[in-house]
Image 1 (cartoon, helix red, strand yellow):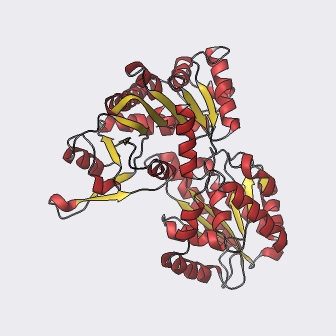
Image 2: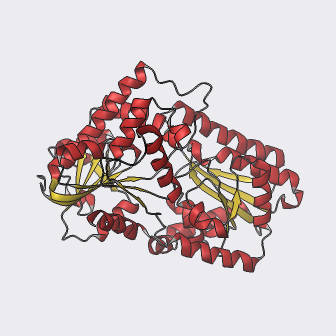
Image 3: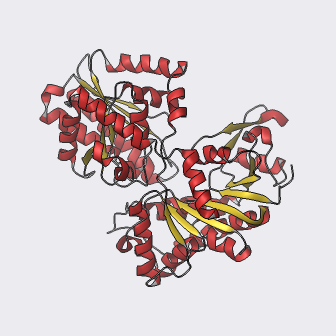
Length: 475
């Protein structure tokens, strides 16, 4: 299938709306396509089929690379992508690994989430410089593909920290385009951002400043970006880049419909059995991502059981910690620590009829929705988070209304803080007391708060979030 060569709207992101796996058995039919969801998928669907749109993404697996080969480097078959025009880039596997794992996930993610143990890391040596060269090559591949696909004056929405250099590269290739960049992560304050070598810090900022508009999930992250520009590049934002804020909300219609399907009802029945009759539930659903702070959440729950023995046998912590980035050793170690702490709590406090922590590590969306519906309390305590959609999704789906215990370091705090029980994510004792307060909250207050949380959480659903960015770029 050939290229459109003339798309009016383009999206660029590392992960695309479809992924492929090679299934055993060989033959032409062995390639299986699986479609993803999320805000960008909803957003692109919302612009309607009459707009010529193309999504440019990277091939992430052997199956993806095979699909690119079969498509001759052009657009993927429409039956695989739900009718969307998708161009997948088969970037050299070593270049991709260096750019994605070596820079995006091991450096940029760590800087923006302030995760380094600074006495030992980061170390910006010759190996880092080699990987940085791959990150530049990866961004260039996207810029070139976008330049090829875009019609005169097209709107291009480039996503996230993986593609911080692409806006400037694309601007140099196609000055006619209207370019937006959106950051889904927090943005580090200047003192932390300047851990990066000066030239690299400047390249990242000027890369994003190649866009007409740089947008963020909250005002806090937008201000931090501006502060970094002033600190690293000098006062004023010289490029004329406009700064915007778009707080991504939950997709209420989709979540409520999906949460009442048969497979979710089955998972609810199974979870009810694991919880036991008449017990309260504290629910968390996260990837085992260092920034999500799962270990301290478990320690706070242990503190609750220690300090408030009246809650023993009356509450269960449903902790869903789905594996993330297991190709990085630090993530494997973190996942192991999550398991260890959960097992320790169960062996210390558990009884014949009560398992204090029900830990699930296999990703299961239907089971997550079942837990949302059963939640009396939702624990969302990240060290730092761009937004955190779980904080927005649980109040929307919860059957009886739930109390949200929320870290002040989550982007969602800006919109939901007033009706949540707010915690300092490093304070174990404070989080334990917040959990106790949440468990003891009167049903009327809980229901009222939950209703207000759900309204705030759905104020900017994914399709609207996307269209607002597009509109702002076209203005």
